[in-house]
Image 1 (spheres, rainbow, N blue to C red):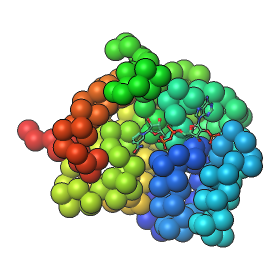
Image 2: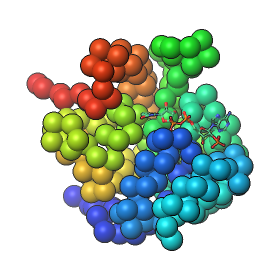
Image 3: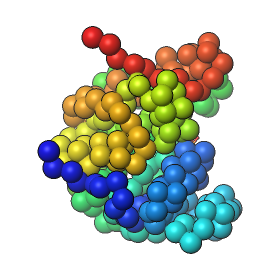
Length: 226
Ligand SMILES: NC(=O)c1ccc[n+]([C@@H]2O[C@H](COP(=O)([O-])OP(=O)(O)OC[C@H]3O[C@@H](n4cnc5c(N)ncnc54)[C@H](OP(=O)(O)O)[C@@H]3O)[C@@H](O)[C@H]2O)c1
């Protein structure tokens, strides 16, 4: 099997998003030795500036467009309701040909908790992003777990549980699978198929939120058994 991304390869990575997910992923990537630029709507975003100052020499910040242009690979860690807007301001040219790891969920919190999905069962945010950016290789993954589990699956059951990838480009999914395994430590990665399979993982959030309430912790995940 062709290994696309070696464990120790240093890359330039753009992280779009200044929330807890963007910060957690960006911090992990810097700890792995990568050069990371965090993007926000505003180049002077306080959270992104504070993160870059704290995270050290390999960390920087800028606009969504700055981060997308910088990254050889780009993570979408923006609010689902703002993702298309954020990616439009990141710029089609800056995303063309690149792998976009989409961890966002189509959650609508406008009516309070629990949130609803703003997509219906015949669509997903991952598909909307792929349709809007046909020359970008969108891979939906990591959206089914809390951000701390995303970058440290061993914190739940020693890492013996499952992560999904959805996307149209087999090479991009292979690259993302190597990232999940080699950088973040995921042992079990299930290729669900094309980007339409993101409908399943995004709508799982309706159950995830109820499990979070029932279990009183965000440190859990699915383990598949046959
Ligand atoms: N929390 C988790 O553990 C978890 C787990 C799985 C998936 N997710 C998903 O990961 C994503 C990030 O979650 P989060 O809690 O870290 O952050 P968040 O508060 O959902 O999103 C913050 C980011 O979204 C951007 N944003 C918000 N509205 C926007 C708009 N209208 N136009 C452009 N950009 C906009 C913000 O830009 P500025 O920086 O400019 O303000 C900020 O960078 C979400 O889609 C969430 O559903 C979260």
